[in-house]
Image (tube, rainbow, N blue to C red; front, side, top):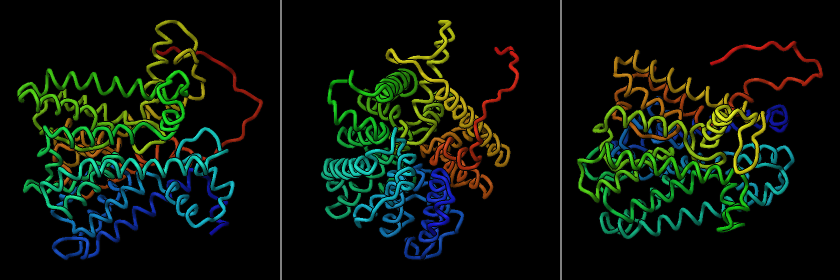
Length: 442
């Protein structure tokens, strides 16, 4: 086993680790004890549910509250926790608890898994991440517990508070609200300030990225001391919440009462951060609103976070490079720092990859199922962005379309660059260079 590990790169270990956890989760969910009817759930449906859980997406073919038993729900939330923290981080946590020595190769894999800038101090940083996750999820559950206990009783209310806290923090979007309406998500709590604020904060905190956590923990309100990456993430996420919220408030939800309109608009601008909960009927939105939500889902959250998508830093780098071209500058820049060419190339590659997967997946599902393209693109964006928002077509899809969604969720979670680096071996750099010839673009 050690010899195999030595032959695999960090990227290959990460993608194989996710694949093994997904397969194991699917097999456990197939067991009769996992379903309320006590029957064996079809493998493909279990595979989609397990992939959606580990890839913290939220797309499902069965209503989580009505189909799965408490055991099945416990399996799902465990898979969500593993997927949100990262398979490698969970493995490292187990090794740390067992007081086992972590090799240099394992430390390098941990570095890649959480997008840390250096190997030095990676074990201590992982410990900081684990403690932070435990504290935040317990606080979220504690705040929401009174509301759920009021509505569902003590034991079930506590379980629901913990489940939704983990699901929100991990940006998963799974819910177990049993209000008699299937796939209703959190629509029964549209105007509840406790549930709305807690879920939104958990989504945002989970999607910031662990390095941003460290900056906030170390430097507090002294934002000037933050890494450039942290400042870019915080600024970009702020704009990606405020601007869509204003659009939803004035143009999409203006038929609702003021309170419901306010909470719904704000919540609907936060949840595409790859969380997947909803408090309003998404099918009632215009195609413009659905398209805007699709774009927000593709962008996702911060690197090294529980969120998926191509990441807000990728989006910000592309904007900075476009701005540099407009101003005839050689490099894009943030906060008085220029962006190196390697970062620009990575961002362009990831951007192109996600846009291609989004369009190809949506068009393929539309052609196979004979469904409207906008609805299929919405589903495709939700899968590749690991979001979980849906217009209700997932349960009705055929086997091929489900496999497309499974593939998109998997690629979206392990990350575009991770998959590229795992698939294509690195080539040796040489001093020789090909002749240069210009090509016109634009």
